[in-house]
Length: 48
Image (cartoon, rainbow, N blue to C red):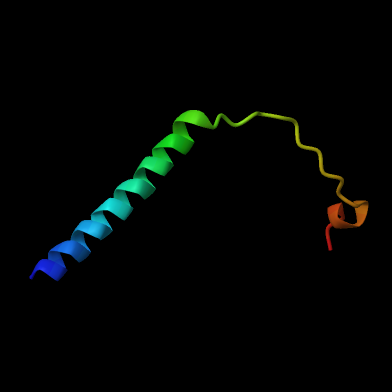
């Protein structure tokens, strides 16, 4: 039973680290809005 408890504890710690990393990304990384321009060839605009 101690090995099962150790395995579950390691999984919980790893899950907590992943969760903390996700929270850190959400709070510290702010997306920068910018204009997006993409050229579409006229042949794609014509109905077939």
